Amino acid sequence: MNLLQQFDAAQKEKLAAARAIPDFSPGDTLRVMVKVVEGERTRTQAYEGVVIARSNRGLHSNFTVRKLSYGEGVERVFPLYSPAIAELVVVRRGKVRRAKLYYLRGRTGKSARIAEKLSMKPVKGVAPAPAAAAAAEE
Image (tube, rainbow, N blue to C red; front, top):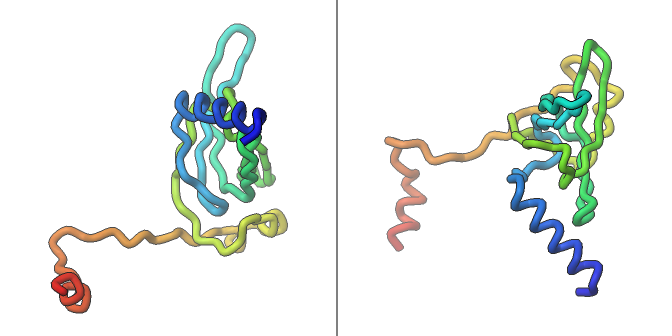
């Protein structure tokens, strides 16, 4: 690693330690708590929408969030390690097969919806399938 990469890695660790960054990908609905400065006061404002793009560039990583505000599509690009971001919360996971969801810009209504990704969590009180139980015994 050269000197610039070492500096980027150190800064990235320092910024990641200050705030937890969840694992999210395009298609996920994200709530970004943004610090807003109004005169001398500072408050946090929620910006919730669908992640349509993510660019992983080390310290310069960013992501784009799209939401509908009063019927108009609004997109905002956030630097991932920005000090203006107070908190990132994944509201729901989306099931998509693309890395960039720019096709959502031309869609409105039901055609702009994204299916929710279902995770396979073990359910308490339900016995495992017979094939899985036989494989576990061997």
